[in-house]
Image 1 (tube, helix red, strand yellow):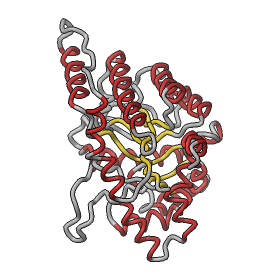
Image 2 (tube, helix red, strand yellow; image 1 turned 180 degrees about the horizontal axis):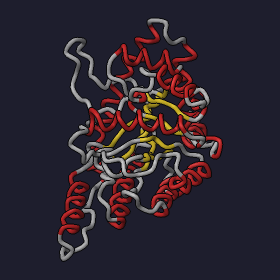
Image 3 (cartoon, one colour; image 1 turned 60 degrees about the vertical axis):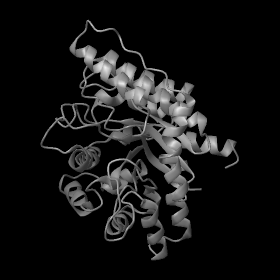
Length: 343
């Protein structure tokens, strides 16, 4: 089985964005009526993925995708908590419906109603709703709800502990995923996302979070940002500061394969090891189109993984780890579901 752990609902039907626009308009003019999500039929949901994520998944040989709301659309920088709660609920409910329509091919990963410096009680409540009531297998956690201004404490700060306690109790991992950038110095897709991946790993390397929460698991997307390329820097900084080797983090921190060229994917596998890389594409997301030098779609990461196996970088066991076994290990609720289905 080939499991893609990083997919976003970038093709949601128009009523979802219309609901969001109405939310934002009401924040600017409270006299406007409270918005409600318009009708979204099952046929509209089917069409939105059958011609997009599901089609591409099948064409590229994938079997199942972990599916979450559009990352840049989470927009946690909007500070109003009731707005964030309603927006996360509406977005997650549509993902749940898609997963219900295509259970063989999708499993839900939830957006959380984070706000800059906001309370974590509603965040934990939505996590619990999605996992316990809707059957979601993971969540996205934004380490910078301010949208590129980094006003929140590092992920090792006690501020985050109520969320971690819930994640450990529910036995679900969190993908570290920022949303849109409000800082013009940081391009959302080309800088902000990768800055976050890199910064968060350094935060974890400076703390003792996994001593307190040994069952906590993070997935760092986009190949870990600069982490694999600068692994020697991380090791050297840790030794200079008298800290443990960052390799010790790899019992709790994993990386996805959203790296859009062969040398980058090969480096990720070589440095982090096949046991810590989970197959992912983020298809129809940040980088669309094809590489003119190869004719391969940028986000067709399966090609790069297959090439790594063909070159001898991955043996058969390691290839199974990347494509399936690591995902089932890091997302135990997914494994339980697939096992119950005989898959």
